[in-house]
Length: 278
Image (tube, rainbow, N blue to C red):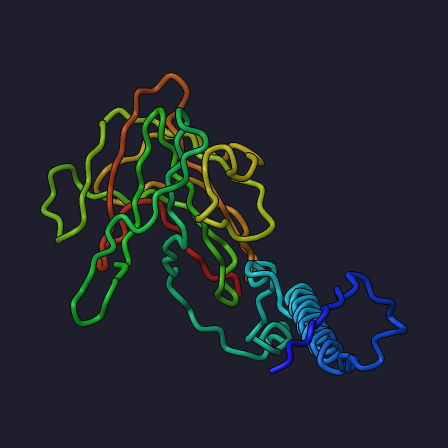
Protein backbone atom coordinates (compact mmCIF):
# COMPACT_ATOMS: atom_id res chain seq x y z
CA UNK A 1 0.00 0.00 0.00
CA UNK A 2 1.44 3.26 -1.05
CA UNK A 3 2.17 5.89 1.47
CA UNK A 4 1.30 9.46 0.68
CA UNK A 5 2.78 12.32 2.54
CA UNK A 6 0.08 14.67 3.63
CA UNK A 7 1.10 18.22 4.41
CA UNK A 8 -1.01 20.24 6.71
CA UNK A 9 -1.26 23.94 6.18
CA UNK A 10 -1.52 26.13 9.28
CA UNK A 11 -4.77 28.04 9.53
CA UNK A 12 -4.39 31.79 9.62
CA UNK A 13 -4.79 33.34 13.06
CA UNK A 14 -6.46 36.47 11.75
CA UNK A 15 -9.12 36.58 9.16
CA UNK A 16 -10.49 39.53 7.41
CA UNK A 17 -14.19 40.10 7.89
CA UNK A 18 -14.58 40.06 4.16
CA UNK A 19 -13.23 36.53 4.03
CA UNK A 20 -15.93 35.23 6.38
CA UNK A 21 -18.67 34.87 3.89
CA UNK A 22 -19.40 31.38 5.09
CA UNK A 23 -20.14 32.59 8.61
CA UNK A 24 -23.82 33.25 9.27
CA UNK A 25 -24.34 36.77 10.67
CA UNK A 26 -25.93 36.99 14.14
CA UNK A 27 -29.56 38.00 14.23
CA UNK A 28 -30.12 41.52 15.66
CA UNK A 29 -33.69 40.78 16.78
CA UNK A 30 -32.85 39.07 20.07
CA UNK A 31 -30.51 41.86 21.15
CA UNK A 32 -33.05 44.54 20.33
CA UNK A 33 -36.04 42.94 22.08
CA UNK A 34 -34.48 43.11 25.56
CA UNK A 35 -33.73 46.86 25.59
CA UNK A 36 -37.16 47.57 24.15
CA UNK A 37 -38.82 45.59 26.96
CA UNK A 38 -36.77 47.44 29.55
CA UNK A 39 -37.77 50.72 27.95
CA UNK A 40 -41.46 49.86 28.25
CA UNK A 41 -41.01 48.81 31.87
CA UNK A 42 -39.21 52.04 32.70
CA UNK A 43 -41.94 54.05 31.00
CA UNK A 44 -44.59 52.20 33.00
CA UNK A 45 -42.75 52.91 36.28
CA UNK A 46 -42.43 56.61 35.42
CA UNK A 47 -46.12 56.76 34.49
CA UNK A 48 -47.18 55.15 37.79
CA UNK A 49 -44.87 57.45 39.76
CA UNK A 50 -46.25 60.54 38.02
CA UNK A 51 -49.81 59.36 38.65
CA UNK A 52 -49.04 58.87 42.35
CA UNK A 53 -47.45 62.31 42.62
CA UNK A 54 -50.43 63.95 40.93
CA UNK A 55 -52.83 62.06 43.23
CA UNK A 56 -50.79 63.05 46.29
CA UNK A 57 -50.76 66.70 45.24
CA UNK A 58 -54.52 66.59 44.68
CA UNK A 59 -55.19 65.04 48.09
CA UNK A 60 -52.92 67.62 49.76
CA UNK A 61 -54.77 70.44 48.01
CA UNK A 62 -58.11 68.90 48.94
CA UNK A 63 -57.18 68.71 52.62
CA UNK A 64 -55.92 72.29 52.48
CA UNK A 65 -58.92 73.79 50.70
CA UNK A 66 -61.94 71.50 50.94
CA UNK A 67 -61.71 70.22 54.51
CA UNK A 68 -61.81 72.71 57.36
CA UNK A 69 -59.20 72.92 60.08
CA UNK A 70 -59.95 70.49 62.92
CA UNK A 71 -60.65 73.42 65.25
CA UNK A 72 -62.85 75.33 62.81
CA UNK A 73 -65.98 74.68 64.90
CA UNK A 74 -64.54 76.84 67.68
CA UNK A 75 -64.85 79.86 65.40
CA UNK A 76 -68.44 79.27 64.33
CA UNK A 77 -71.12 81.62 65.58
CA UNK A 78 -74.07 80.21 67.48
CA UNK A 79 -77.19 80.20 65.35
CA UNK A 80 -80.00 82.02 67.13
CA UNK A 81 -83.00 79.69 67.65
CA UNK A 82 -85.11 82.47 69.22
CA UNK A 83 -86.27 83.95 65.92
CA UNK A 84 -88.76 86.77 66.37
CA UNK A 85 -88.92 86.60 70.16
CA UNK A 86 -87.13 89.91 70.68
CA UNK A 87 -89.51 91.73 68.33
CA UNK A 88 -92.49 90.02 69.95
CA UNK A 89 -91.55 91.19 73.45
CA UNK A 90 -90.76 94.69 72.21
CA UNK A 91 -94.38 95.07 71.05
CA UNK A 92 -95.46 94.97 74.69
CA UNK A 93 -98.49 92.83 73.90
CA UNK A 94 -97.23 89.64 75.56
CA UNK A 95 -97.86 88.65 79.16
CA UNK A 96 -94.41 87.97 80.56
CA UNK A 97 -93.78 84.83 82.56
CA UNK A 98 -91.69 85.07 85.68
CA UNK A 99 -88.70 82.78 85.30
CA UNK A 100 -86.51 81.76 88.21
CA UNK A 101 -82.76 82.24 87.83
CA UNK A 102 -81.12 79.51 85.77
CA UNK A 103 -78.02 77.79 87.11
CA UNK A 104 -75.22 77.40 84.54
CA UNK A 105 -72.39 75.04 85.37
CA UNK A 106 -69.00 75.76 83.81
CA UNK A 107 -68.29 74.10 80.49
CA UNK A 108 -64.62 74.14 81.48
CA UNK A 109 -63.10 74.09 84.95
CA UNK A 110 -59.38 73.44 84.50
CA UNK A 111 -56.26 73.92 86.57
CA UNK A 112 -53.04 75.66 85.51
CA UNK A 113 -49.81 75.73 87.49
CA UNK A 114 -47.81 78.86 88.31
CA UNK A 115 -44.64 76.95 89.18
CA UNK A 116 -44.96 74.71 86.09
CA UNK A 117 -46.07 77.16 83.38
CA UNK A 118 -45.78 74.65 80.53
CA UNK A 119 -47.67 71.84 82.25
CA UNK A 120 -50.98 71.18 80.50
CA UNK A 121 -54.24 71.29 82.41
CA UNK A 122 -55.27 67.82 83.68
CA UNK A 123 -58.07 66.13 81.76
CA UNK A 124 -60.27 63.15 82.56
CA UNK A 125 -59.07 62.72 86.13
CA UNK A 126 -62.27 60.86 87.10
CA UNK A 127 -62.75 59.00 83.81
CA UNK A 128 -63.19 55.26 84.26
CA UNK A 129 -63.64 52.13 82.18
CA UNK A 130 -66.94 50.27 82.17
CA UNK A 131 -67.07 46.79 80.65
CA UNK A 132 -70.45 47.51 79.06
CA UNK A 133 -70.21 51.15 77.99
CA UNK A 134 -66.47 51.64 77.61
CA UNK A 135 -64.71 54.79 78.82
CA UNK A 136 -67.05 57.08 80.76
CA UNK A 137 -66.52 60.72 81.74
CA UNK A 138 -68.62 61.72 84.76
CA UNK A 139 -70.22 65.16 84.75
CA UNK A 140 -67.89 66.44 87.46
CA UNK A 141 -66.00 69.71 87.87
CA UNK A 142 -63.06 70.62 90.08
CA UNK A 143 -62.23 73.91 91.79
CA UNK A 144 -58.66 73.77 93.05
CA UNK A 145 -56.85 76.93 94.13
CA UNK A 146 -53.56 77.33 96.01
CA UNK A 147 -50.73 79.88 95.66
CA UNK A 148 -49.34 77.71 92.83
CA UNK A 149 -52.58 76.41 91.32
CA UNK A 150 -55.21 78.54 89.57
CA UNK A 151 -58.56 77.39 88.20
CA UNK A 152 -59.96 78.69 84.91
CA UNK A 153 -63.71 78.45 84.33
CA UNK A 154 -65.63 79.04 81.12
CA UNK A 155 -69.35 79.77 80.68
CA UNK A 156 -71.67 80.35 77.74
CA UNK A 157 -74.90 82.35 78.16
CA UNK A 158 -77.46 80.46 76.09
CA UNK A 159 -80.95 81.46 77.29
CA UNK A 160 -83.09 84.17 75.73
CA UNK A 161 -84.13 87.06 77.94
CA UNK A 162 -81.81 85.95 80.76
CA UNK A 163 -79.02 88.45 80.26
CA UNK A 164 -78.22 89.49 83.84
CA UNK A 165 -75.57 87.10 85.14
CA UNK A 166 -74.09 86.50 88.59
CA UNK A 167 -70.86 84.60 89.14
CA UNK A 168 -70.85 82.75 92.48
CA UNK A 169 -68.85 80.39 94.65
CA UNK A 170 -70.98 77.41 95.70
CA UNK A 171 -69.44 75.54 98.63
CA UNK A 172 -70.77 72.99 101.12
CA UNK A 173 -70.46 73.14 104.86
CA UNK A 174 -67.06 72.03 106.10
CA UNK A 175 -67.34 68.41 107.23
CA UNK A 176 -70.74 67.91 105.58
CA UNK A 177 -71.67 64.44 104.36
CA UNK A 178 -71.19 64.40 100.57
CA UNK A 179 -72.32 61.92 97.96
CA UNK A 180 -69.90 59.66 96.12
CA UNK A 181 -67.20 61.39 94.05
CA UNK A 182 -67.91 64.80 95.64
CA UNK A 183 -65.27 66.19 97.99
CA UNK A 184 -64.43 69.43 99.77
CA UNK A 185 -61.53 70.85 101.73
CA UNK A 186 -60.71 74.50 102.38
CA UNK A 187 -58.63 76.77 104.58
CA UNK A 188 -61.27 78.86 106.42
CA UNK A 189 -59.39 82.16 106.04
CA UNK A 190 -58.78 81.79 102.31
CA UNK A 191 -59.13 84.92 100.17
CA UNK A 192 -59.37 84.84 96.40
CA UNK A 193 -58.74 87.11 93.45
CA UNK A 194 -61.04 86.56 90.46
CA UNK A 195 -60.08 87.85 87.03
CA UNK A 196 -61.96 88.10 83.76
CA UNK A 197 -59.88 86.78 80.85
CA UNK A 198 -59.90 88.27 77.37
CA UNK A 199 -61.26 85.67 74.95
CA UNK A 200 -62.90 85.68 71.54
CA UNK A 201 -63.26 81.93 71.16
CA UNK A 202 -63.67 78.95 73.50
CA UNK A 203 -60.62 77.66 75.34
CA UNK A 204 -58.88 74.62 73.90
CA UNK A 205 -58.29 72.59 77.07
CA UNK A 206 -55.91 70.25 75.24
CA UNK A 207 -53.47 73.17 74.86
CA UNK A 208 -54.22 75.05 78.08
CA UNK A 209 -51.37 75.83 80.48
CA UNK A 210 -50.37 78.78 82.65
CA UNK A 211 -48.22 80.07 79.79
CA UNK A 212 -50.90 79.69 77.10
CA UNK A 213 -53.95 80.84 79.08
CA UNK A 214 -55.75 83.98 77.83
CA UNK A 215 -54.55 87.35 79.06
CA UNK A 216 -56.21 89.04 82.02
CA UNK A 217 -58.72 91.69 80.98
CA UNK A 218 -59.60 92.93 84.48
CA UNK A 219 -59.85 91.95 88.13
CA UNK A 220 -63.52 91.60 89.05
CA UNK A 221 -63.31 90.72 92.75
CA UNK A 222 -61.22 90.00 95.81
CA UNK A 223 -63.24 88.14 98.40
CA UNK A 224 -63.49 85.48 101.05
CA UNK A 225 -65.87 82.69 100.09
CA UNK A 226 -68.27 81.52 102.74
CA UNK A 227 -69.11 77.88 103.23
CA UNK A 228 -72.58 76.33 103.14
CA UNK A 229 -74.10 78.28 100.26
CA UNK A 230 -73.45 80.78 97.47
CA UNK A 231 -71.09 83.75 97.64
CA UNK A 232 -71.58 86.42 94.99
CA UNK A 233 -68.39 87.13 93.08
CA UNK A 234 -69.42 89.36 90.20
CA UNK A 235 -72.54 90.65 88.45
CA UNK A 236 -72.32 91.41 84.73
CA UNK A 237 -74.42 91.62 81.54
CA UNK A 238 -74.41 88.44 79.48
CA UNK A 239 -76.04 88.80 76.04
CA UNK A 240 -77.29 85.64 74.42
CA UNK A 241 -74.46 83.35 73.16
CA UNK A 242 -71.75 85.45 74.86
CA UNK A 243 -68.66 83.68 76.19
CA UNK A 244 -67.27 84.38 79.68
CA UNK A 245 -63.97 83.07 81.07
CA UNK A 246 -62.64 83.73 84.57
CA UNK A 247 -59.50 82.82 86.50
CA UNK A 248 -59.57 82.12 90.25
CA UNK A 249 -56.34 82.61 92.20
CA UNK A 250 -55.26 83.19 95.77
CA UNK A 251 -55.30 86.83 96.81
CA UNK A 252 -51.85 88.35 97.03
CA UNK A 253 -50.22 87.48 100.34
CA UNK A 254 -52.89 84.92 101.22
CA UNK A 255 -52.02 81.31 102.00
CA UNK A 256 -55.36 80.16 100.70
CA UNK A 257 -56.45 76.67 99.71
CA UNK A 258 -59.68 75.23 98.36
CA UNK A 259 -60.16 71.89 96.64
CA UNK A 260 -63.64 70.66 95.81
CA UNK A 261 -65.16 68.27 93.32
CA UNK A 262 -68.76 68.51 92.21
CA UNK A 263 -70.65 65.36 91.28
CA UNK A 264 -73.52 64.49 88.99
CA UNK A 265 -76.05 65.95 91.46
CA UNK A 266 -74.00 68.65 93.19
CA UNK A 267 -72.77 72.00 91.92
CA UNK A 268 -69.81 72.81 94.13
CA UNK A 269 -67.21 75.17 92.72
CA UNK A 270 -67.74 78.28 90.59
CA UNK A 271 -71.13 78.64 88.89
CA UNK A 272 -73.14 81.26 87.03
CA UNK A 273 -76.79 82.25 87.43
CA UNK A 274 -78.73 83.86 84.60
CA UNK A 275 -81.51 86.24 85.72
CA UNK A 276 -84.50 87.31 83.67
CA UNK A 277 -84.28 90.62 81.76
CA UNK A 278 -87.52 90.57 79.70
